[in-house]
Length: 80
Image (cartoon, rainbow, N blue to C red):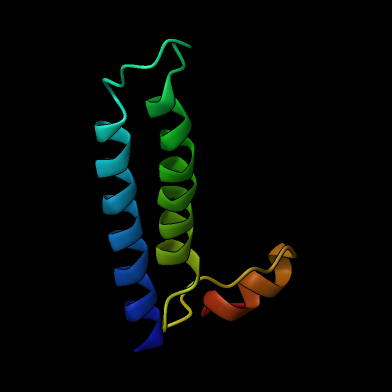
């Protein structure tokens, strides 16, 4: 349950930062700084965080890292 709450929180943060980035698109300052580009960096960071969280840190723990092929084959191959 906590995983889905974390996903919802990350989605909310991403959406809020996207709105901030769009709001910074047409600023009228004299320095010609692209503020929208600076706000897209956290959007990209949180988006990849959500992607990795959905792929590898779910409740069912379907991702199993085992760098040894023989261990993996013993676990999955019925004829081993």
